[in-house]
Length: 261
Image (tube, rainbow, N blue to C red; front, side):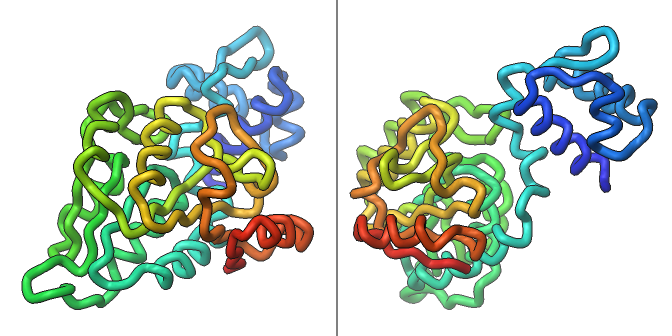
């Protein structure tokens, strides 16, 4: 297991347990206690946990892991979801993309498609995003027009939030909003961890003709702290094959088209 994968697993264990001893973590991770001590020390330096005598305790940030620690989770499923989502985007579309590992994969697929410019010198697609990493990655693609919102970035997700991020949505319209979420459930709608991100994401849905939620199976049927939108606002849910048939049926009954990549 690579170090970043081990760190991600450790932080998830802490999020569940709240507290771990070095011995417990070493047993669960099947590594030496020396490795765990080193991992705990390095994660404590990054303020991802609090070091204690003989172990570590979780900090609140462990429940909303920084993007760099999330990238290894369900990676193959997210790539399949991204490919299926890109098929929904027509050339020349104006797309809203929020931040997250799955939407970052969607952005990569869209950026590498061989779509010709829509009309003459017009871009093949236009992407409006509040995610710094997506803007940075796609800025060098000549056939993609990138529009970044303003705002203040959150280090966990690289998403820009606040009044400056929201202001742009008074001036743009979107063909489709593609949203990464922390949870999506029929009874709760689409949710995320942070209320500032939820506000910006909600405005994105209000400006879009179509709303597509992208979520691997671990997020379907779950909810997070901050609500983005009701299920009635979601047109399409793109997920993976691990989602139970009962959940698919529930969303279908709620008039949400479900695509299992």
